[in-house]
Amino acid sequence: MAKIFLMAGAAFGGLSVAAGAFTSHALKAQLSEKSQQIFETGTKYQMYHALALILVSLLLSRAEGGEGLLTLAGYAFMAGIVLFSGSLYGLSLSEIKWFGPITPLGGVAFLVGWGCIAIAALKSSPIS
Image (cartoon, rainbow, N blue to C red; front, side):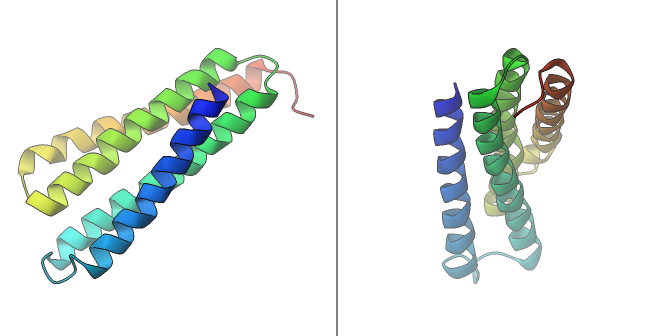
């Protein structure tokens, strides 16, 4: 799983950079300032949680306990990126309002991921 989360983190991180650059250059004239801000929030949270996936990968590669929780954290971060950032991208690009209620589900997934890391830290042996 560590390798999968590392690859996913790298892919989501790279896509975050590409999406941010594409929007700030190619779509700047087409999007309202509010839509640009919404899109930017999506790219920021995607990057933060791409890095969190890389952290999970590193923790899994050294874990001595808590692997199940770390794996759940990785899946939660991936789900959060798709739901949170994906819904913000959809909302900003299309202004379809039903994307809005999906965003908090992604936020909950992010919270689950961070909570799993915290609990795994309590259950595991110290990292040396």
